[in-house]
Length: 135
Image (cartoon, rainbow, N blue to C red; front, top):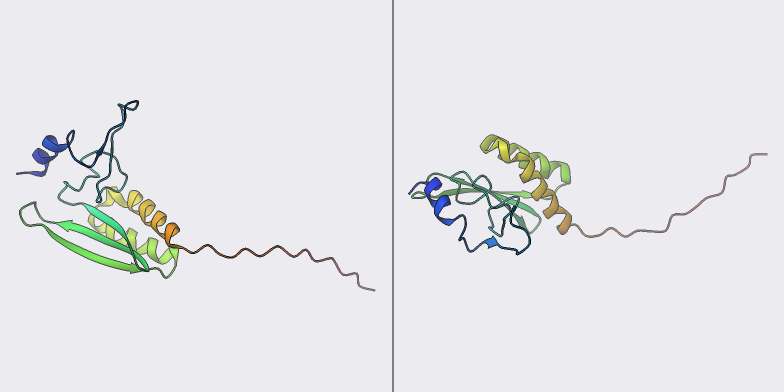
């Protein structure tokens, strides 16, 4: 079964779908492979070229889905937290070569995961020093 047909069958009845009474225009999803949590084929894990970004012990794990639904192979890359620029550059490099339309969403998800993992820095009170007068 093609991914398009699978999406047409499951888009309104998926178990990941978040339904709210007041909001009928935008539907959200709790799908683990959905970068923006929007219920659309572009961001869904039903897409044959889906990208997953998950937290790891010391960084983030980027998983790309390769192949059709019959032969689902995944490629996983763990990026250690050596600094925000290093992690962002590696996310951008991996996702841009695979799905260029998801680069911005992948960077946002990776950045948010790094924010959650960071320990809060201790803030020391600012010391106000007086100007010294030279005689």
